[in-house]
Length: 319
Ligand code: HEC
Ligand SMILES: [Cu+2]
Image 1 (cartoon, rainbow, N blue to C red):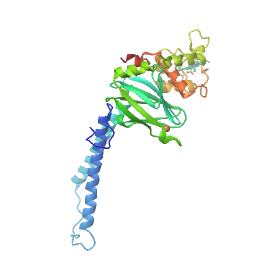
Image 2 (tube, protein in one colour):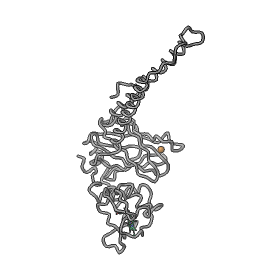
Image 3 (tube, helix red, strand yellow):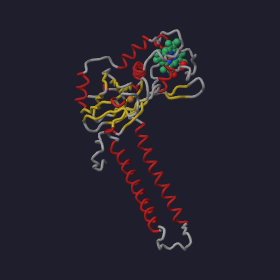
């Protein structure tokens, strides 16, 4: 609920109302507590001011039930607020499986987005209303932060990592997009707009962008150009694991650990192949650090994801 606060940004995502309810509850609670304590401080300062006739003779009173009572009450309130916040946090950390996957790249000083169909935009992001959208974020240089106040989402884009932010836009509209991490001289100009469109308009917008090559198809070309297919292809002489269906699966490592092959794992496999070696294979894969930039890495990841059922949900399902 926005409680009609005039300066608050509109609530335009499925998460916005619950974030606001928590925020304004915390605000009301801390304001009430602060006011109560201020009142006591001022009240006692006046009552016991120098020369006042207040009674100072009695024993200092102590009440065990009262002390236990307020200790327990604070504990319960603190844990309740923690639980509430943690629930929202977990929800914000787990995008629905059918979400539309968009690749976002922060660089000094712009946001670049790529839709699954290959459509590319700068400082503007078109999304359909009513459909969950995951933006996987990477940075080409320094830390940036993807911030859409109307959606109540903010997520850092960190060099050397893939992070995620997801939202479901609920109201069609034109919303501010900011970079919320100081990233150099033109930081203040880094930003743009998110355009939330009704699904039919989004589909029309996509097709207006022309028939491009999908992100995964560009990734597949790179996969060949970089020589990945030379080892990972079927006819390869080198023994390398097949990459079909690897995304989203548990992978056994040479050091007996098991990891889920998420984007983090795939990215590290390409940039630091010696870090986690797949069980049963020689650590012969060369590092591609410095040979692929962040945008190319996102294309490779899109391709690898498209090889597995979990990764192949994309705009094709939008009508
Ligand atoms: C010289 C051969 C070779 C080349 C070239 C090569 N790889 Fe590999 N790759 C391997 C081998 C061997 C492994 C298994 C050992 C390991 O995990 O390092 C592997 C592991 C992987 C894994 C982890 C797979 C799993 O099942 O855990 C991924 C992902 C991967 N490679 C992607 C790529 C990509 C993308 C490229 C091109 C940019 C590439 N590889 C180029 C040989 C190669
Ligand atoms: Cu920035």
